[in-house]
Length: 415
Image 1 (spheres, helix red, strand yellow):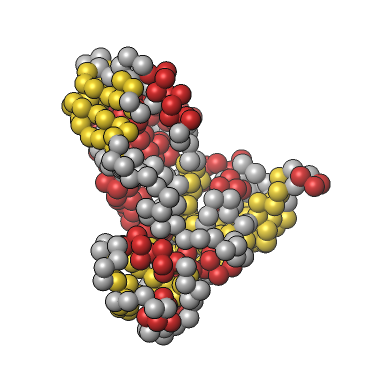
Image 2 (cartoon, rainbow, N blue to C red):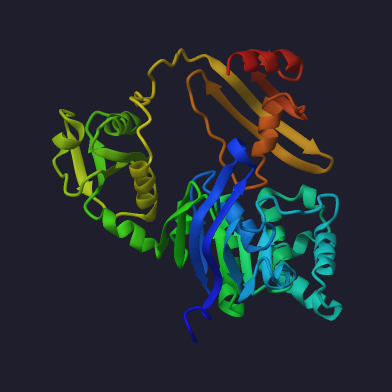
């Protein structure tokens, strides 16, 4: 079998612009990539890189201005009607009908895809077991958590086992456990059905688990290959930095200001550093007279390569002063947010169950939890958009159960 026959998708010299004249926006320019059959290829790049445009071109929703795209041997322009039969496309906002149940959404998409009635129940059963949604087939889609909605969207995309799946950031906004479950579903289809997947992602750890990666920036391809091909050139340029008597955040600020440093990010109890040149093991060359600084060599990761590549091609953004925690902030200990035994019920369903916490001036406070844990409900209560069912909520000195409107005005004026 020829190399061309092994490829599920071939993009050849494709350009696409939107608008005309002075208002034209060049979304893609001279893009050439390929996706091999039976593999998972990751599409990564910053916002505005052209990932979604490329996905829509590949499933025939757009026509290229220049170049050609062949999907499973079919031309996306000349044979656009046939493309729909071989491609399963899951956009960022998959079109679930939130007023329909899980089962009703499956039935609707089975009808739209012309799925044989005799095959439906078996396929429904497989997909519900695979996604863990079997106990929720009677629940309205609008009442599902974010991760469950993504899994239902993926199940609808997989109903007819398309040879090629185009997944546009399927795990965005999904908690880590649900992300793992989505990847398990994707790889199961690849391994059992030989499905080919082109998947765009905002998570670099996900890109690192793909068979190949395509890196886009401003509508151009920066490279294509296995993830390790991107990280290999950074050998000797990645270090784990520590400094006695200096916090991780303060150390990050000092290192980010160094002209020798491309990237500095807090990781664990240290700071991960990517330098512009290889072999800079002398701390003095990296951070001048910073006392007690140690640099231990580390294996480069795909994330290091991605950030370094973008930093090297982006023009300097001026002499920005690095942000050092504590500078300019007022840490007077004043309690700005106070939550005590907060409860929020929706009928017989309890979304928030007796939580308590406080946030003081100058703090960055995080709410961490899986999809459906109650984070968004808590935020809406704090913003005065939802009333609490029970408990105490105070923001900027105002009791939200009695004075939500003044609290919102205070928050808007001091954000």
